[in-house]
Amino acid sequence: MSAVTEIRRGERSSFREESPPKSDIVVVSHRKDADGITSAAVIHYLNRGKVILTDYGEMVETLEKIQGAKEVFICDLGLNKMTFDGFLEQVKRLCTTGVVHYIDHHPIDPEFKKKLTEAKVDLFHSTEESAAILVFQKFEDKLRLAPKMKVLACCGAITDYMDLQPYAKKLIASFDRQFLLYESTVLSFTIAMIGREGITGNQSLVQIVDELSEKDKLPHEIDNASYYSQEFASHSADLIERAKRDGKKLNNFAYYKTRESSTGNVANFLIGAFDVPVGVAFRDDGPEHFEISLRSTMDSDYDLGKIAGKISTALDASGGGHSHAAGARIRKDQLEDFIQMLNKELP
Ligand SMILES: [Mn+2]
Image 1: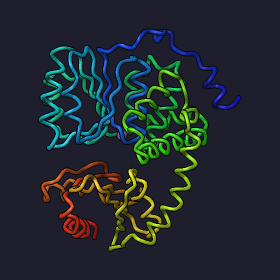
Image 2 (image 1 turned 90 degrees about the vertical axis):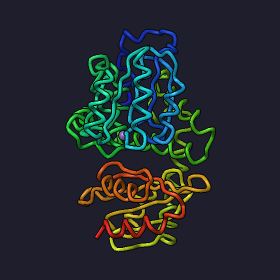
Image 3 (image 1 turned 180 degrees about the horizontal axis):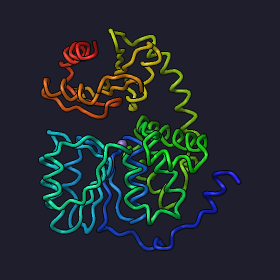
Image 4 (image 1 turned 180 degrees about the vertical axis):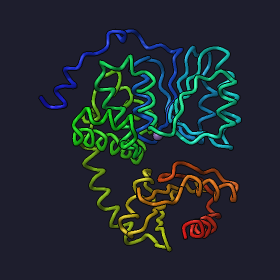
């Protein structure tokens, strides 16, 4: 029996009988990547509330709009010095009417952790696994008979490069690896295409969450997924050429200014095109800012999250992330400084 048939035959857990959506349950998750989308889908599958997708910059504003919720799930949204105070204020407010669950895997300041616990936030945090895997782990008792949700959690881990972590590895080993790689790729390419085409971005991504959870689809069954994947693959092949032609190489990194929404992919292509350990993509974020993605090879010893944090602090900008994948947002006039400082940090 193929992996797909097995999943199709998998029983749905009975507690999730066709109940109407509950508007007092809200899931807020990371918009841009497959880990955030799959985290939201698994929560939505279990609770059928309202789904809101957001990004670090708008996270506090998003929380401000939630009123009177009984349960709020916040997933895959890391915190930093710039966002924490506003975030804490909002979760404290939300805790007066209900329960706030914060499920995340980005590095967190111990002081933030303490303050969230004091505010009675239900904290489920570990840097060891992807957010979708943490969501699955937290609710594993309820998800045992939901193989499609298992697939989604695996997709979150794979697309976040956390598929070799202990829990993810075990979950992934329970399916066919190639099948999971296909599903993950289709999902992340679909998300990238929707971001790129800007088809009322947020709304379409919320629809994807809906298809994956309420409509019980796998990533390859999402409307237009094959078209999106094929288009994105062709587009990626072109992009490798362009990055090679127009990118610039310094000692240990290469960089490129792009209009792509999936700056992470561009950064990865630069690594291969220039044979460097680190790739950096800059993208216009409005008329005054650049959004920056940094990626490194798995065997690189640089901690990009720390480096992005250090440079951003020096530039009074925001930035941070994981050791092999990080991001920052700077003013356009800081571009040269950013490149020079990065060059010093990557000897
Ligand atoms: Mn993540």
